[in-house]
Length: 347
Image 1 (cartoon, helix red, strand yellow):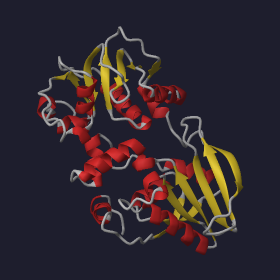
Image 2 (cartoon, one colour; image 1 turned 135 degrees about the vertical axis):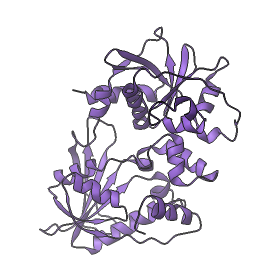
Image 3 (tube, helix red, strand yellow; image 1 turned 90 degrees about the vertical axis):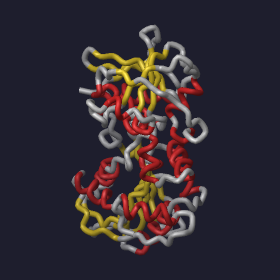
């Protein structure tokens, strides 16, 4: 049985640059995050995501292994923290094109390595670790079971609620949700007068650049405001504002994905080149929020079939999918085409 609290403390340690121990059965890995570490003393290797290893042309050295597993490489003899970051961060490839050759080493435990890469994603860091010797003293010990137990939805509670008149509708209530697993607080905005009809629901993932700064690279800000107006035009509805920036990879990694898009990669390839899933969001947290609000049937305002399936898999009856039409602009037209052609959005 895993302990989500240990995973949460490990995530906090990684953000601070502290080493952690990932232990599974008899295998122990002492790891420090490349991104937040201040040096490479004691590092014997670097653990990289599978996709980053492929970019570095390591695939032929692991052809007999599982190509979805992270890859362990021997630390170069001249490695310093700048070189380690250049190895880990694909946005620097044009600046530092000459890297390697690298020597891949046997991976003693794939599940421990996979758990470490997932912890990096949850911490919003590059999925790359310095592998340290036993001389280093980690502050936290975590297992793959602990990482698997880290689930926003399981321990979600209503923390606070209050009336909140908004421009779309003055009759609205804001409900804040908290979980012991994560420091992120999710929010629901309940609009209109509740009755027995299924509400119009919008699952909106946090987007600082689009929602707050008015970025033209995505359609998030216009979608948010259009959704609020469509909910206000219905009998009643709920906007679920989920703290899953960058489709679950975090703000800083999302900005790295933007930098890769500036180099010519689309949003799908940018995410995978960074070492992450195309969409790492977990919509079970939205289902739990609806459960706490007493909602079991919804009319879902979305173009994303994964949101429909995610709610249905979590036991929410999606009685209707309502489209959300947003006009393209010259800065996001390619992004919208990618959503349509590569992730199945109905635009």
